[in-house]
Structure formats: C-alpha cells, structure tokens
Length: 153
Ligand code: DAT
Ligand code: MG
Image (cartoon, rainbow, N blue to C red):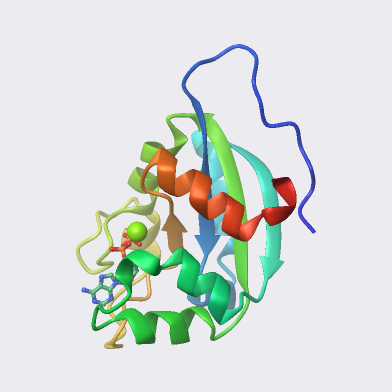
C-alpha cells in the first residue's frame, strides 16, 4: 500500500503529478535510491511510493498505445521479469521536468547527465531497457496514476 498524502496544493496553478516507474532493470541493479535521489535533488516531492509486481493486465493497460508494435511483447515480458517501484512525484511542471531528467528513450544516445544516459546502455535485447518510465502528458499522468495507484481514486 502506498502512503496516502493530500495532493491538492493551495498556492499554485501549474502543480502537476507524474507517474514514474523504476523498471525491473533498475530494481535489479539497485538503482531505486539513485532514481529517487535525482527526483528529490531536482526539487520534486515524492508523494506516492510502492514496490510491486505488476500483472500482465496492468501492464497491458499501461502500454496500450504500443499494442501491435514489434517491441510490445518483449516490453511486457521485460516488465514482468521482476518487481518494479511505482512513484508519484509532484511539483510545478514535473511531467516535462522528469522526462528531461530521464533522458531520451534510447539509452545509447540519451544525454550524459540524465538517468538513462548515465545509468543504461544498449543490452542487445528486443526491447530497450532504460531504467525508468515517466508520464508524457497530463492526460497520461492521470491515466497511469489511476492504473498503478487505484487506492487513490
Ligand atoms: P518512453 O519510455 O521514452 O516514453 P515509449 O513510450 O515510446 O518511450 O516506449 C515505451 C518503452 O518501450 C521504452 O521506454 C522502451 C521501449 N521501446 C520504445 N521504442 C522501442 C523500439 N523502437 N525498440 C525497442 N524498444 C522500444
Ligand atoms: Mg512513453
């Protein structure tokens, strides 16, 4: 169970929440703390946190936009390969800000200084293994938080 925290701020219009996942490669490599350190060092607040083993059903919902793509099945298999850590981070423009912290999808070319650029590389697998997921829009964030933290609804 994630901790229940009051999420509605009173003093800002731009405050957002984003869903971050530390994927199985990040958990296996003991990078959970490193990811959280980068989120918090940037100044975002962690307002939800849990380790979980997601079901195929949860992952199919989360990655629905990728159904039918060549990497879809390998992506689900990879995400089912071990526990993940689901995080809700909060702050002004956190959705865009965390995507910048994460770096681009391909870890080979992700900028050094980013999570993916510093901590991941091409492993020669069918699906890119890149340590973290971050929501890409306010709509995705709301949808994804509801999938991984249904208890907050
Ligand atoms: P992101 O995680 O940067 O938002 P995405 O949503 O396009 O990227 O894809 C989800 C994940 O699927 C991504 O983190 C890694 C994997 N992936 C994406 N495109 C891929 C490709 N062309 N080949 C292999 N894996 C890919
Ligand atoms: Mg994406």
